[in-house]
Length: 295
Image (cartoon, rainbow, N blue to C red; front, side, top):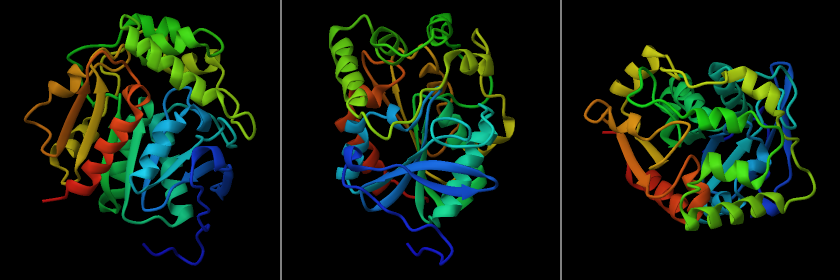
């Protein structure tokens, strides 16, 4: 990978704990980002109410240990980034594109979790063949849904603050003891960083952006659905078998229609399977990036 002379040089850290927040100026706002690991770049778009410190460091570090250079960032106006805050997925994807351009990244993988997975699908359209792979985590395909999300998510997500019970309900499987324990460990790992943290996204503002009840379709974009049906870019989706936000059933409903889609479903898991199984998820993502290629 070559970096243009006007690109911001990448300063990477060996682990999440060592990674410092960096900034690039682009199109009138400042984007905050962190880089962990060396190797093929993987740019990850974050979830609803997600900021830099709400990626599980065990997952990020496991990806880095697999030979990936993991780049995470705060969306415009959220966390430590400046600019106008919005959850319009096109704007979120534009944040990713501007960061990729500012850092001079080429031959990279792109990915996203939840609403960030919607942004990643749009980013695929924006980047074309620059993106060699797409990694989707607990997200939704475009178009009409076979199964809508549950009201439980919207009621829980509207609550102010971020506590363990809320985290477990949204991202894990509360009915399973092992999943609840995995939630506790993940929550504690994210809370361990005490300096250089990105501020939380206020719940009241965030829920107003997406509404207070399930919608169908959640991502009404026939153009992106058509792209997924015709792209040669390999796509991986990791999901839980009980995702109350973006049910995995909607990807299986498209069996036979998406020629490059790889699906992995975790049992007794929710909206954050990569937080429940960080090492396994990282190993499967790395194997996909190493092994899946355009025809």
